[in-house]
Length: 374
Image (cartoon, rainbow, N blue to C red; front, side):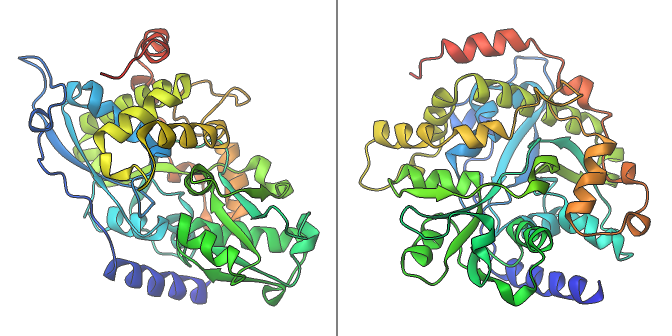
């Protein structure tokens, strides 16, 4: 574990040195031409939200379309989106107080806790009820099944990415040693695909939102069957500091409610959410593609992404709620000892979930289904 923690620290420092930030320019919602709270509503508080991603991906538009509709502003929040180099970077930024919230999987702060280092973080909202990673190869690759991975090189976004955890868990399931499935950092989306096409790696282990970008550009990939463990593992959480929860519970409540509303809209009409995202961030439309082509490409690749947000088959039928059973499965997925991590309930809280879900779901769904961007 000491080696793991040391490696995590080194990777995190390297990621910090190359972090990317999307500045909120201009900062206030009214300056962006977006809806603002009515007179007498809560004053706006600047909230920095770190993606576990180096790019503004329309597949994550449920994070920011709430600003377009004024849902965050109604709760007194002016959201600033921060790009990072991946989950480790996002986790470190939240832990250091550089941002108020992040959207990483909780692997890094849980692993730190298991080794005796408490980063002071807590998950306040479960975004992905299913983990979003998978192995993908080129269409004509001879790799057809998981057993074919033995002796291959697998590309991960970075050595601080959740894909590393996914690959390690697959090794354990296949009973492979490290040298029989080696990891190579290849960057995100297009850069990763280039490494696959040129033979630097044989297979990729990326999240669905990264594959959506690649497939949206017309690159055809084939996904391998999921390992058995994947059925029981969740993905990204909204993470913040425990002391921030104690100090600013109203901000936490407001953010989560807006976030849940954005998620409900996104699932009901992903095409409309993508169109709004491209309007908010026009620089994210791929060069050489029309807006219509970019939207169509994104929408075609979204089903696996949307599937990770659904909770139809889960005991809790609310946006964002965590369960003790899921967390125990997650810690097993990380390869950690429950006796060292302690009571899993210290890693999450559901205290804000009822408020997050206190909106008219049908009204949001109707708005989404009938939405036409002007």
